[in-house]
Amino acid sequence: MRPLLLLDFDGPLNPYRSRETPPGYVRHEIVEGERTWEVRINPQHGVELKALAGTFDLVWATSWEHGANRLLSPLLGLPSDLPTILWPDRTPVRRGSWKTPYVADWVGNRPFVWIDDDVDSDDVRFFRRDHQLVHQVDPRTGLTATDFAAIRAWADGKSFADKEIPPHP
Ligand SMILES: [Mg+2]
Image 1 (cartoon, rainbow, N blue to C red):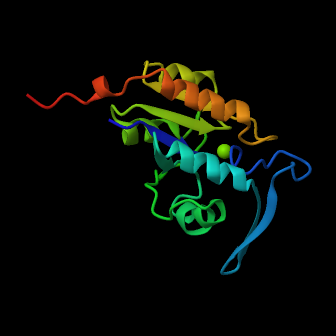
Image 2 (cartoon, rainbow, N blue to C red):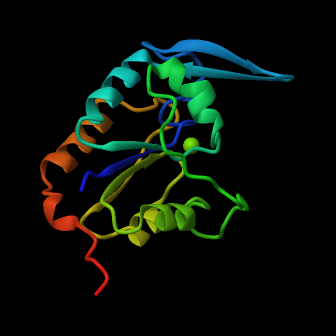
C-alpha cells in the first residue's frame, strides 16, 4: 500500500509568515472572479513533490480545498486532479488542529505523512502510530531541504507491504 503525503499549502508551500519573499520563491497573484490572493511559491517544491510522488500518493489537505487543484497545482507543476480533503467545519478546537478529525476519517488505516504549519503536539499524539507522521513546517520558511529529508527518511525506513487494511471477515 502506498503511503499518502497530505499537503497543506499556506505555511509549507506558501511561507506567509515570511516578511520578504524568501530566496527561490516567486510571488504570484491569483485572480479568480472578484477575488485576488497573493502567494509565494518555490518552483523547486514542485520538483521535489513530483519526485516524492514516486513513493507517495499526493493529497491536498489545505483550506483551499478544490481551489488547490484549480489554482495552485498549475503553479507548482503538479497534476490538477489530486485527491482533496474537504473541511465541513473549520471552527477552531481547544487542542490541536481543526483538520485532525477530517484527516483521521480520510486516511483510515493508510500510512501517511501530513505536512502542515498549524499542527502541534496534540496532533502528533493523536496520530502516534508507527505508520503515521505529522510533520510541522515553519510558515516563515516553508518546506526546507531538512523537511524533505525528514519525509524521505521516514519513507525509507518503512515497509508498507504489511500495512494493508485487513479484509473484513
Ligand atoms: Mg497552513
